[in-house]
Amino acid sequence: MLLGAPGSGKGTQAEMITRHFGVPVTSPGAILRREKDLGTDLGMETAEITQHGGLVPDKIIVGLIEDWLRLHGGHGFVFDGFPRTVPQAESLQSILARHRTPLDLAIWLEVTEETVRDRISSRLQCRSCGFTTSVTSATFAERPVCPYCDGPLVRRNDDDVDVLQKRLAEFNAKTQPLADFYKKAGTLRSIDGNRERDAVFADLSRLIEQNA
Image (cartoon, rainbow, N blue to C red; front, side, top):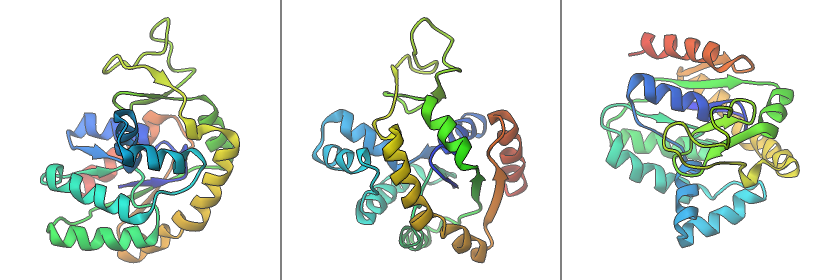
C-alpha cells in the first residue's frame, strides 16, 4: 500500500507500479469518482463530503475495499491512499485475515508541505481512468488528454487551496498515526517523495522486488 499526504505522489506511483509489475491498483477516491460520474446516490453523497475536504465514513470505504478485494485481490494488489485512519487499518487487518492475504509493505511517501502545495496547484487527473499528471507535464497534445485512454484531463474539485488546508489538517490528525501503526507491525518503509517521480519509482521498485 502507498500512504502519504495529499499530493505526495501516491496516485502517480500506483499507476507506475501497476503498469510495471502488472498488479491491480485501487483507491477509494478513484472508486468514488467513478460512482459520481455514473450519478449514483453513493457517488453524489460522497462527492459532497470530499469537495469540502472531509473524509468519507469508514464503513463506506471499508465496504468498497472488501468488495474490490473479492474481485481483484487474488494475485497481489496495491492500495493507493488506503487506509486513511487507524480504524480503517484495523478493519483492513480483519479483511486480509479472512481472505488469507498478507500485507507485505506499507510504503510512506514523505513530502514537505511546500511540495504538496506546488503539486496540488498544478495537478490534472483523467476523468475516465484516474491517470494523474500536471499542467507542465501535459504537453503531449494541444489540449489536455489522457495518454492512456484519451479521456479529458481536468482539475479535481477538491484541489482548491482552502479545501487542501482542511485535507492537510485531516491528514495530520487522522492519517499520520498510521505511520506508528504500521511501524509496530513491521511493514512500514519510508521514501523521500519530494523528488522526481522516476527517482521515487526506482526506490519503490527495489522495495517491491526485495519483498516479492
